Image 1 (cartoon, protein in one colour):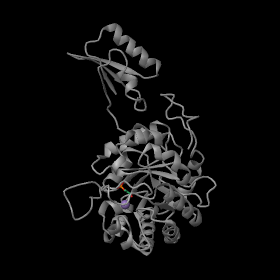
Image 2 (cartoon, rainbow, N blue to C red):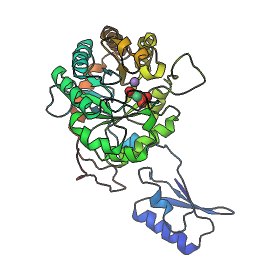
Image 3 (spheres, protein in one colour):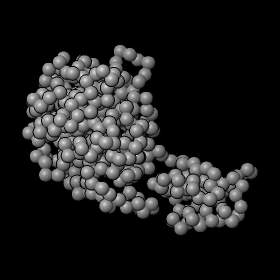
Image 4 (cartoon, helix red, strand yellow):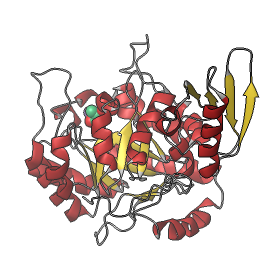
Length: 376
Ligand code: PEP
Ligand code: MN
């Protein structure tokens, strides 16, 4: 990191350097023709930029390294989806664990629908249930979801089938009432830039599945994740769900390169949503296979017992039997690419599970302790 000081006086420069030293940050002074630079040689990435920009005399702060300081170093590589004392067993992803499948309808349409489907997706090999109760629809005239009633139905379905449940919240006001009925908060593509929502989810103690905005760069996705992490919720899963391009044979374009790129930049688990990426049920299986082959930690796939009758996103919904074939392919591909991985993964699971859901200190250098942050 570099601090640009313009033509600050010796006294101001000295004060800044003392401030840095008192934080344990080693630094070097570089006098240029038109400005003085302080180059911080210690790792300062975990400190927010305003710590430096608010120092008297600092004109500009230039970060040299990654955009994802917490995502890289402090986040949990393994995220636990199953709540404590649930009947769903331990459901985890990331950190080299075998990939998982989360599945369910685009929208929760009714109690019977979600209960029947929960049993079907469980039998197909899914380990968590998804379903939208608050639907962010492009048209104001389309079905907007069943709201809290829908979440109650899904919770019941999840308990019956032994599956943790994942659902989207689209506003801060929905977080508190919906929290008892879901295990993972989903942030949809349309809300990736809703930083106030992200901050509030950062104060919860449940994992957050953050989807990439449809026109968001990878860096913007990583920076959005930092809003959640910085508030103390280190259980963040990133999700590639297709981006808008000029191509219109598919609903979006699945950017699979995002998977290895994100993995090289952060330690966060990465899921792929082939359903919203391609929008066509015939393409879901091949894109799922490709996602696993390039290292995705999991898939989130829309399914329905009678796909054509889905109230929303019918064209991309698949039957549970197709889901079962995808799960099978996923396991085959993962095993072929990672011989012997399952055993290691189990060891990691044990180790990581011990810190899961605990209040965590983000970084020693910032001394930002999050113990006592409100639970959910
Ligand atoms: C969804 O998962 O139902 C959804 C609306 O997805 P996205 O936010 O990726 O469009
Ligand atoms: Mn959908």
